[in-house]
Image (tube, rainbow, N blue to C red; front, side, top):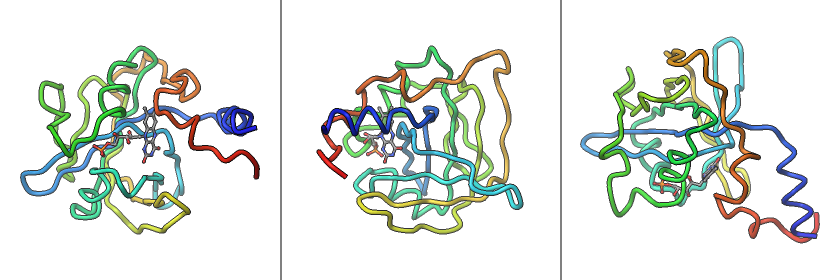
Length: 166
Ligand SMILES: Cc1cc2nc3c(=O)[nH]c(=O)nc-3n(C[C@H](O)[C@H](O)[C@H](O)COP(=O)(O)O)c2cc1C
C-alpha cells in the first residue's frame, strides 16, 4: 500500500529545480520538486521545504531564494544538489553559477531561473511552505525541455516516506 501511495503522488506533475540561497559568506543550493506558481499579481512562487535542510536556515536568514529550472538531461545536477547536504561541504564549488539580484545562487546552465524575495513561511506537516515574490528571472535555453519529477525515479528516497494508508 505504501508503494501504491507513493505511485499515486508521483502522478502529480512537477518539474525538478535547484533552489539556492546565500547569506553573508554562506551559500547553498538543494534539489526541489515541490515548487509551484502561487500568484499572478504579484508574481509569486511557493516551495515546500524540509526544515532540516541546510538551505532552509539560509533562506530564512537571507529572506530570499532563487529557483533554477533543470532541463531533462541534467540528472547529474539533480543528484549532486539533492542527495547530499551542504552542511559538510560547498555544493556550489566547481559548478557554474552566478548571483541573482537577491544574491541567491543561480545555475548558469539551467533552463531558466526565478529570483525571489521571501514573503512568508507556514508550517505544513513535516515541511514548511515558503512563499516568495518573484522580482527577476529569465530563460537561458529556450530550446530545452524541463526535467520532470517522475523521471527521477526514487532519487530522493521518498518512496519509503509515504504512509501505508491515508
Ligand atoms: C528529485 C528530488 C526532489 C526533491 N525535492 C525536494 C523538495 O521539494 N523539498 C525538500 O525539502 N527537499 C527535496 N529534496 C531533497 C533535498 O534536495 C535534499 O534533502 C538535500 O540534500 C538538501 O540539501 P541541503 O541540506 O544542502 O539544503 C529533493 C531531492 C531530489 C533528489
